[in-house]
Length: 277
Length: 324
Image (cartoon, rainbow over all chains, first blue to last red; front, side):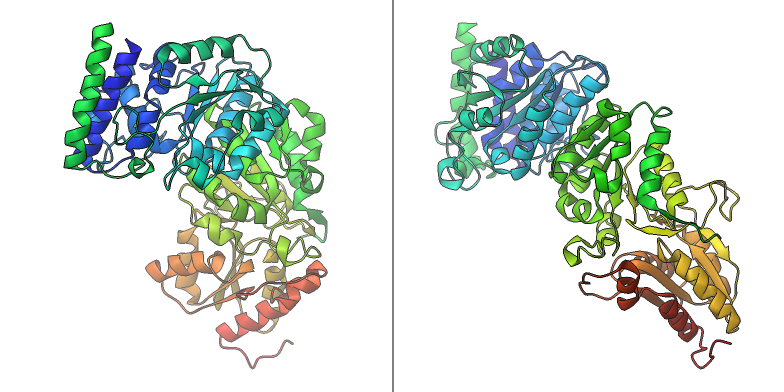
């Protein structure tokens, strides 16, 4: 069911990006299953009380995937699904990149890369200082990992070791200008986190499989050694053959031609999932 | 006014300790300069509420921002230069954009890290942080005002930048001294230190003591100064400045900052709109300074009683008048 909903969100995001002629398809499509599974299965949140102090926190450090976050938040009940069609409009609550002051459910304004690790660490440390037991998740992309500040945060997290703090990497290995290996290679990524004294999941999970993501959550829940990092293999632009793993679809407008070819592909994917339900 | 000297950093470090019990949400973060900024006092007294994040200032600011979203009241402490230049993205995109209650204890500001040289001297910080929406910018004139500003900042639901001098400076105010309005320290309220009719001097920070001395010299020359101490550059007490200039018709600003974008800029912006008047400034020219003793460095780069007196007299049209 969650697998189906993730694909449905993908279609809605494609519709909106085409309608608006602006927004980032590649990174949004990459994070669909991760965001759906987090908000529907993993995180303890109350959409009717978004400021509930004990809620789990997610910071979308790869803020350019905003449209997918908004689609998932809308389906989770934070605001009407119809409001998605105001994405990037004047006076909209759905800003180009996530804005915590504008959108219910958004925990931190992001967009400029490299902030998520540090701010989420601050949330996890606040939980410890306030004797609360919420979990703090940061969802990062390749570009985030390029930023020096991310590694300042990684160092500090290993020093302070706050409980229930997890870094999740949407590791599609494609950036704005090309494949990550050509722009800024991050491998061996798990070894990097380990070298900074993080507890890294022994498996790289399939970030497009809800069941694999749930397995990764079971691993996280079983840990006592914080912070933890989990790497998910994903595909930028997932679901559309000519957009998948193609850097040119990082943020290019979804024009009429692309839309006409892409949408049927996504619908076919949805139908396959529907038959499995 | 007394001749007693006190360092803002010592007062600030003590004020953090004094407020710890009254404000249980207070946490302090420092970037490996706690011994210099004096947050070490808080560290030793409240180790569970203190984080030393190492030499990673940008990370520190964002950690504090994350904490602030969860109800804590973080004070981040490092040198003013590093906040303004290494943390500009974090200050703008995370703290100010979200109006988070983070207090920036911006130490070693102005030329006060004098011997360390231009690499450590913060003379453009006010121009930078003043350009950030939602930020309050405070430049205390003495150690007492620094403590008052901290308490006010910790009770504000938004970010505050407090500029702190490294070195002992004259104590100008008593703890209980009211503003001209009769109120205690408040954001956006200037203090009237002298009443006069020939020109207005608006001053912020350490040069306030110099401006007081200059006002006395000018009085002896027959020039009466309306002296306004502007502790908060943002929000600016536009009413007080306009009222003063309506009386005197001339404005001299005095600050320990480049002439671009600090107090001179803030006052010029306000007067240009509300009460245009001839202006001049005592400020650092568009240049880098150098190593040296604090007082001598200030004098060499134009921040001195003599220079204030000279420029004020010229602005008041009394260049030929010699001190009696």
